[in-house]
Image (cartoon, rainbow, N blue to C red; front, top):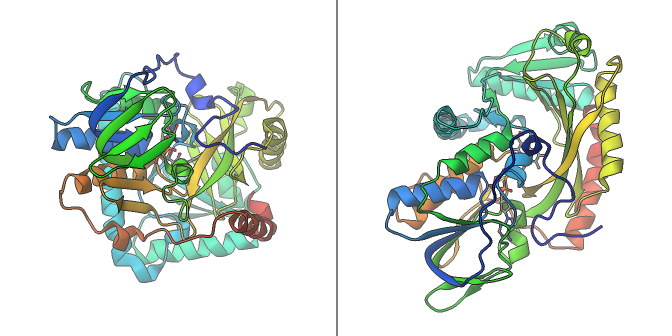
Length: 430
Ligand SMILES: Cc1cc2nc3c(=O)[nH]c(=O)nc-3n(C[C@H](O)[C@H](O)[C@H](O)COP(=O)(O)OP(=O)(O)OC[C@H]3O[C@@H](n4cnc5c(N)ncnc54)[C@H](O)[C@@H]3O)c2cc1C
């Protein structure tokens, strides 16, 4: 299996293929100079670019991406936009801090929502809420922890038993669930395309243009791409899982691949057996568990499985994903995947982001830990504030900072070792 230096996926993003063909931006073919270069045009990069333009409209702003909009993880994700902290962050001892984080997050969601209102694409962004579900004992324990956090925070939630879950979601697989209204679901590829569409045209964008190296000289930085170089005063690294491949943050962020699949549209009979909720999202109670969605246009989506630093064979992944879906829906007569794809996430040891100025005039926001649609947007915007000497909240204090990790081979051994133990512990949630 090949390790990629930048995203070079073997599969197309399923969400993106449901949209009209995208006209990609040009490849950078001539050397240029720019006041700032943003590497990566996912949620983080786009938010950084937009904010930079608001703060310094006379600066030349250049954004490069190894791929095209919608084909990166920003389009490949499951489309959950969470308004509140995830279960694994939920400690009733840090309530005050979490409330402040949640405020920043919900302010960001409002901005994203506003952007979708004027977008040419339907981002299918709805405040559906989300179900957190447990099928085994480790899941039940984690659900109880989350329930305590929600109670302590006085956040609305509802406990659901197997029968209630079956009525809503059409599956008896789960032993208990917890519904909270604090989540939006969206079509992620439509969402990222819409965010890009709304960037000021003065921002120069290049696609299929990976940064190969970031070289520091006395007064500036040079970004090398396959065909040309960019000389710049400041750099924003917004390539998330791949920052380490540029030699930046490699001790803090690891590249982890995960996989998703979307079924064909289900027929009426299948849909009627799926319960009364027609647009839902299920989040697992264990970090290795499966995420599921029923989309508003009548498809099921499953996201599951992880690999360290390389993509597995997609045929075998497809079989495994179908197996996990069928475990939940054994009676659905016809289940066929329309698409199966992989996506890279930036994992940090303690789940905290790598954020801030890491070298003179070199800024980074990376380490999404599988939940960066909203946080990426927030952190990207704040990174431009920081680089333009604007006040910013204390991100390190609020969201923590990514811990140091060893490099390979120790990291890979560690990941695989922990995976085996955790997979065993959370078998029912996968
Ligand atoms: C299958 C899957 C499901 C997920 N589900 C969710 C979810 O439901 N909710 C949620 O909040 N998060 C989810 N995530 C995580 C989410 O996708 C990320 O947190 C989010 O995309 C982070 O945005 P970003 O802009 O920081 O990074 P990315 O979206 O990864 O964007 C980085 C960009 O940098 C580009 N790039 C990389 N290397 C280079 C280089 N050398 N030169 C130039 N460009 C480069 C890439 O092409 C990419 O476009 C999921 C991720 C996956 C893979």
